[in-house]
View 1 (cartoon, rainbow, N blue to C red):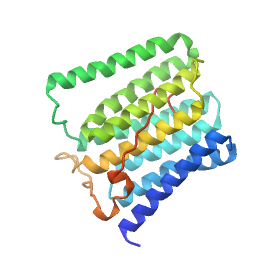
View 2 (tube, one colour):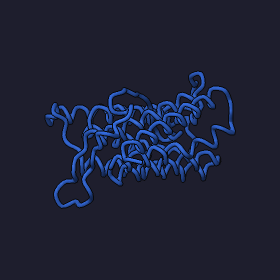
View 3 (cartoon, rainbow, N blue to C red):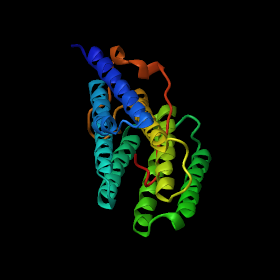
Length: 251
């Protein structure tokens, strides 16, 4: 099987698993949901690797799988360890954006500073609003995790518009989780909304990196990312959007 054929098959498998999982959330098929969720990110990671994507991107997705699996276990300890796994994934994304990303064309210093100020204000405002309603034991971890997530979302600027949108989706998805922990009013089918945003976020981040990142900066080592024209399945020209993020912020 050629690389292109394998990439298309893996991308189709990821899309099918995502649709089945989202359908299970909508229709209350709990067993299907629990079985499929841990398989989502490994399939996407395999697609990335077949496409010649960087190992840091593969690691970020696999840490997401760890978080997905741990959060299904339930309980405060599993939640905190799962959040730590997602945090490790965000660190991988940040390292990837620094090593392989590029400042956007519009990125004059004052513009980048203004965007950074906007992300910072959004983080501070969200934490301040949620703080009184969060369980005391989770306030610090949620605030720290959400700061790292916000930094990752800002860093995604360096990997192009798709990765930027993916970072915003991650923020939205995890913020919805945090509001649930704080017992704020939720939209209809909140778990569906959280997973839709999360899946879109991971896909957009992965696709954005595959499209825009180049070889690592001088002296950093590591293999350059490669693009396989034959493997550009639906993710190459199609658009996907989504959500994700905040400290309870983990689907």
